[in-house]
Length: 117
Image 1 (cartoon, one colour):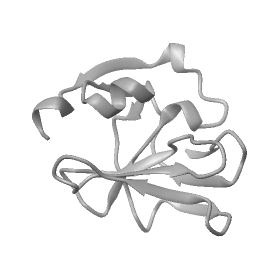
Image 2 (cartoon, rainbow, N blue to C red; image 1 turned 90 degrees about the vertical axis):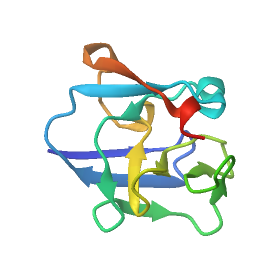
Image 3 (cartoon, rainbow, N blue to C red; image 1 turned 180 degrees about the vertical axis):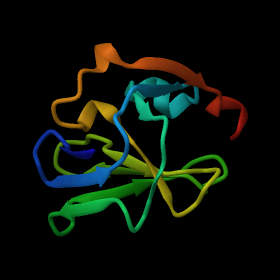
Image 4 (cartoon, rainbow, N blue to C red; image 1 turned 135 degrees about the horizontal axis):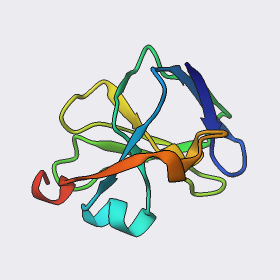
């Protein structure tokens, strides 16, 4: 299925193809707890994540091992996706940013990010 999404202000837009989204992850690392994101259980390769980003709108935050790269919009502060710690070059998507996705219908699991950092 083709999915699309964006940050709150629309400066960072993205799209990707995956099977129907039925699962999500909550992460217990200090960053994810504070931002309240629901991450995709799947990963999308850099080539498969289509991005439409206004010039200068995207910033990157790293911490801990500095391998995972958390991207956020400079305009509205929303985190739409991040490059993963375990698979550099692949992304997890903030499912809260995916258009028309009913998060109440997803099965959520906890990801133990706190012990990876």
